[in-house]
Structure formats: structure tokens, C-alpha cells
Length: 136
Image (cartoon, helix red, strand yellow):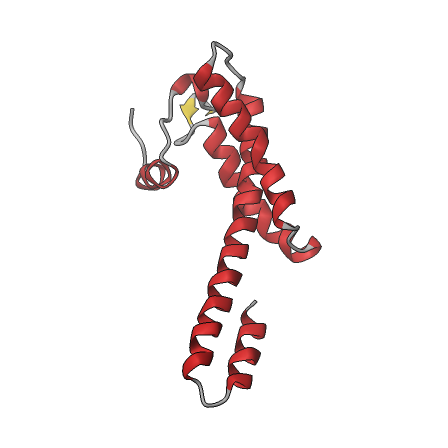
């Protein structure tokens, strides 16, 4: 199957199998990534305005958003159950949103850790605290 450079990039980025039976089609052409990965991409895009408008939820809430996709995926892997593309899309959206929230938490943790390390060598730890506060 022919795929654009951007489509190949998406497949590599998401590690997507792009199976036709698990993908959406538009005007007879298959999406470059499967329904679940499409959902993850949509969720990642939606997470940015959600985080700006509503803020980032606590980590347990983000983890809860990831559970439906993990449950659905492992249920398919371990049993004969087969979910449909709309369910894959929906669970992928929830996972994509949560994934961005977890990246935000990871960023904050890295900045705080860097701040602690820099304070060990700094002449003015107050400046480090201000920079960490600004970046988190």
C-alpha cells in the first residue's frame, strides 16, 4: 500500500500496524494509522487546549484515562474478543489525552530534579527556585 512521507512518519512514531481491518477509510483511501492510533493522535491534539483551559488533573485521574485502552487492547490480545474501530478510536482519544498529561508531569519532575541538583552548586539558590517555579 502506498503511503505519504508523513503517513510513514506517523506509523513509525506510533509503532502502528496500520491493518486495513482496524483502520478508517476516507474516499476509498486508508488512514495512514489504525483507528486506535488515530484516537491517540486526536487525544494528544485535544489535550493541549484541555490542559490550558481546565488545567492538568492529578496523576491518578490521568492513569484512569489510560485504563480503557489498556483493558481493551489486552482483552483483544488475550481472548477472542474483537473491539470495533469506534471503540478503538474512543479509547485511543482518552489515552492520548492522558499521555500528554503524563508528559507534562514528567517535564515538571525533570525541571524540579534539575533545580535540586543545580542548588547544590549555586551561589544563590533563590534564583534557582524562581527559575524552577517559572518552568513548572
